Length: 255
Image: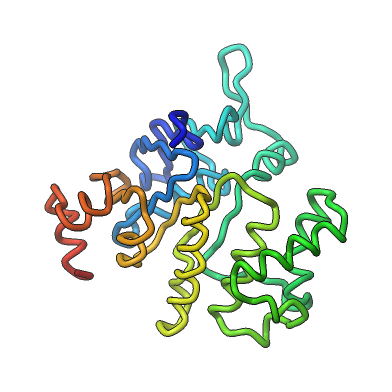
């Protein structure tokens, strides 16, 4: 594993009015690492994930992706918020998959996948289509290129959403509860796709309640509660031998 973090978060705070959602998060994620963040609803997991690619603005702290500080620039010892175009350029290295699939209903699967590479990143249509077909094979949907989202199951739509996020060739993938909107029988196919990506060495930060996925695919499990990281370690450390009572209480609902 590379000894330099790809993601470096320091003292990350986020408030909504008087409500403090993140209370000083410190976390490193290394290239090729799969980090799974667990915790009860309202613990700040998704908010922290959205701060990583600046979909949420921090009130305090820094997040570095490689050598870039996301959303800000340091000039003469002072932080300045970047304009939207600069932030969009920073996000080119970050793919994100949400709870809802957010596919364009009027576009085919193929058109959904190539929209960003062609329209935003300036890739040729031919190149984008070739890579899109490769991604569809990766997520097990090579026969669905010409289908519309309405003709797909929820699990298939989420796998298309994963392919769409991968189409920009990101260095980092963020997953925000990617199976929470799915019927239980469809969860397995999405988790299988994510396991395959983990085995290929993609750097991933995954917010989920899927304990089985954390046990099988994570290099490191992070448990959050009340806007803090309570503990972190290998899946065995956190899921089998948790040190903190709050972690044990949370896991008792699943294990």
